[in-house]
Length: 121
Length: 144
Image (cartoon, rainbow over all chains, first blue to last red; front, side, top):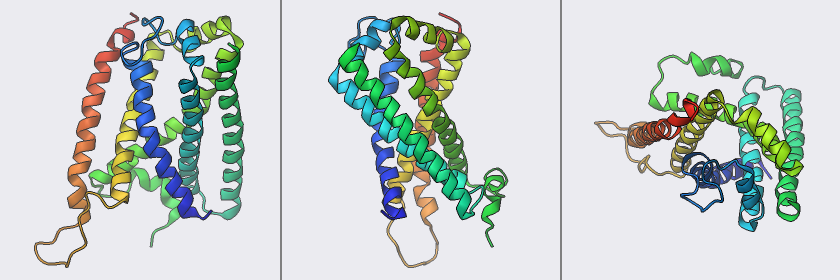
């Protein structure tokens, strides 16, 4: 893929993240229990709520999408910013490799924890 | 001629900035903060696979204090500002709010003037969200 397609994917990921993030904020930070019924509305981070979300297929799929879209959008943006510090090709290549490696590791870890929670907890 | 090596410095000292340039600066600052926070968030939320004790201990360290509440509020505000301005950028990227190309006849207009209403809309929505978030978070700022 050429640069323009990666840029288009960056925007597409941003578009979907817009809706996912406002849903996430509503669910986790503002009005716990108002958007989706939860076991203990006092705090969405309490273990019973975490367990409830972990066992739902929709939430697990959303977590996986979230991790992938967020990492791609965030690291692509970070690469663009870091490229402005130094435009020399070796620097850009090193930064790109490091961000791709970190992104793949974090995506693997995030996806594993999401699906481990769904099947095992 | 534009010198790309001055990129970082020119974010802050780019001369006479217009509204969109300040939004660009804000978008970058919030974007960098969120990109750096994301790995930490993935690692911390992944702690649930180690069971309720580890999860509870982790949350005690990172989520249950007025300082943590303030950090969380800053994060929510950064997400909202970045997301709203990002949606503005996507809309203008696809040609919305910048008008159709036309002959340069007096009085002259440009695409920046045409999209200004969208920029003000983003700022207004961000301001409403920030006020709302302060109200929503205020009990936690005081440890309730």
